[in-house]
Amino acid sequence: MNRIWAAIVIIVMLVGMCIFGTVMTDRMTTDISTSLLKISDAIREGDSQKAESLSKSANKDWQKYHKRMSMYIPHDRLEEISQTMAVLPTMIVCGSNEDAQAECARAQEQIRHVFDTELPTMDNIL
Image 1 (cartoon, helix red, strand yellow):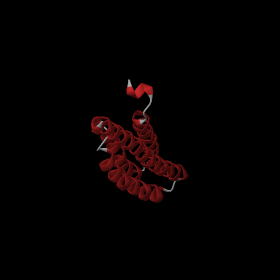
Image 2 (image 1 turned 90 degrees about the vertical axis):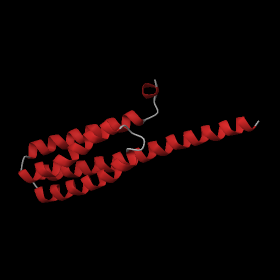
Image 3 (image 1 turned 30 degrees about the vertical axis):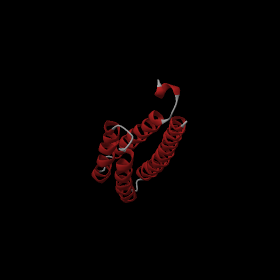
Image 4 (image 1 turned 90 degrees about the horizontal axis):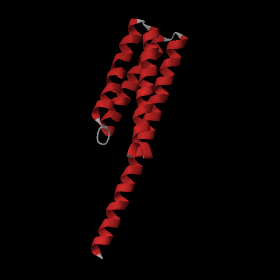
């Protein structure tokens, strides 16, 4: 009987951890995606100072999120996003707006992919 209760407790803990991880990943990816949209809008409007400060802020936020997500997401996917986020402020400062917008779009797609692969769907489980 004790084994059954232990198994139930373990299952409940695993499900709880999965739900917690999914909710946290959703919050973090939504936050970074929103920041990237603001950066893209600032670039489109020609406000490079605002875009630069937003990109530096988004990069700091991403570094915090990267540490948290690396506990349960493969590092190679997160490193790709880190590289993209690191290049973004430099591109804005150099004035290559088209490249900066492309990097914003690339980062958004990478973040969307990370979130999609963490969802507990049949495609991801099998």
